[in-house]
Amino acid sequence: MIFGAPRRVVTGRSRPLGPKAVQSCPAVNGLEARLFIVDVPFNLRLRLVRDPGGSFGLFLVPDGTSVSAERARGLVSLMPPQEWRSPNVPVVQIATPYSFIADEECWLTQLPPVAGTAQHLPGSLVCGRFPTNIWPRNLSWALEWEKPGEDLVLRRGDPWFSVLFETTRPSERIDLVRARLTPELAAYQRQIRNVVGYVSGTFGLFDEAVARRPARLLVEEEVQG
Image (cartoon, rainbow, N blue to C red; front, side, top):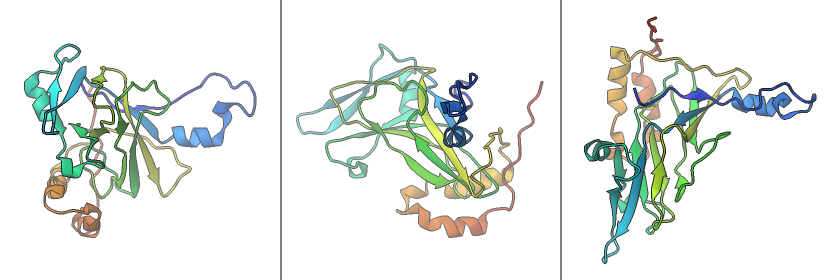
């Protein structure tokens, strides 16, 4: 219940001041037609501590955190040093329940918050792009902690990250619906879950994934009331 639905990015929708105003620009409208923002679901404050040997440890700061320590252990992790981009820039990762599925070619790009008030962060988000129709995995939020002397502070309701969708029909508007977790979709997701723990270069598995994929996986959930 705490993880809200992605919301469409719509900016400057007042009456245009003229034919060349920002909200009349087809490039701006084209982006906003396929861009969504996900908000932070809870208050969280994390701190990095480095021991005399140079190793980093991750600690939960109670002041500014609404998540219990037990729940945080299941959501937040410090990635192994061999998976960092730089030996002195740790990467913290937060698991999310968000996954996206399409029955036609549709690429998702995860980005920092766009057209929203971004929080001050001690580093840069790890961004990525993959096809949702082939690889409907759960998204993670990851940060390269470039300023280890600063706490990472997330506040519920603030913009967390953006998701941009692209299809083979770039002029069409993207709409999101709540998908039903059918037995077919659940079985397909089980086949791709945690493969990064066994092999590198998971994009090389796309052909095999397509071969195993049922023709239809997206079934809209019926909302009661």
